[in-house]
Length: 374
Ligand code: ADP
Image (cartoon, rainbow, N blue to C red; front, side, top):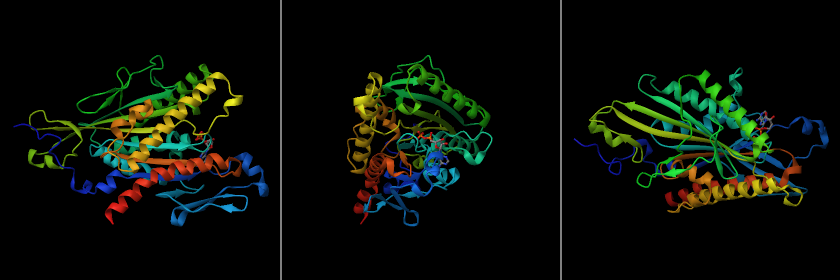
């Protein structure tokens, strides 16, 4: 007996809601005032007015206020890391546990809390843990240690070159797409199987140290590179052949004989480079290069998100290495969540406004689908 072809297998019943699957969920998080902002006391001026109860915010400048911008969720300055995980990442992780690919990304100006949201380790204080650690904790607690395995790759994308953060001597790692399955791989990048949370902390710490070391060597800041954690999940499920209709239609799986069924999926967690514009006039050569590549990758990410939002059949992922890496974890039945992070200060009105508008473009997908449903 032959396994059913992935094309014939139907998605699981609770994934039939195509609208839900296609949605890019977009949450906005505002960082609490930092020490400098607190020190301004009553002189502190903000450009953001939150309306978290209706998931909206307005931007303010002098006596002007913008229209209300709607998000899937708004996280005020007192929101917990736990709540962010539950709203932003948990649905994606649940779908990855079922055999789908997924992506969680943080976008925003440097200093607004992307790394805190995504990469905070919180080794000694679990309440501080960010999305990477919580996602792996969640996966560990949901999988069978006897039959399933989880492995990670941790990469940095700087000046359109992929570097391995777990084996920093490996640079210029190619991004290869299987022409038949569309599966993206990075030949040569370390894929380290992990057994427990302690090992997770070790690897993330190594990655963080290597990211800092690489950036010091290149005389740049970590915020000028994208950090990408890829979690590879292999699950062996005991599924009777008559039940294979419940396998995700695009899940990559093999049926060696009848049983067991191996589900392969991956989750990309991306701490994007700072979205701020660099003042090119006063910048040195390498900063101009950085700015060029960051603009290229973030604008190509923006274009892909727009294409998804417009339900376009063609998602232009080829324009940058960032979007090429995301190719198979983005769109289709893969789930995507985006957190856009902003600071509260009016001094950064222009960057804050551009972050909010980036998030709004990604929100369009909801509108498109709602329109279709109506
Ligand atoms: P980014 O990655 O966007 O450059 P960081 O995550 O490094 O920003 O955050 C800048 C600083 O603000 C860090 O010291 C971080 O600990 C702090 N910070 C950011 N967001 C929060 C938050 N929600 N609660 C407490 N501290 C935060």
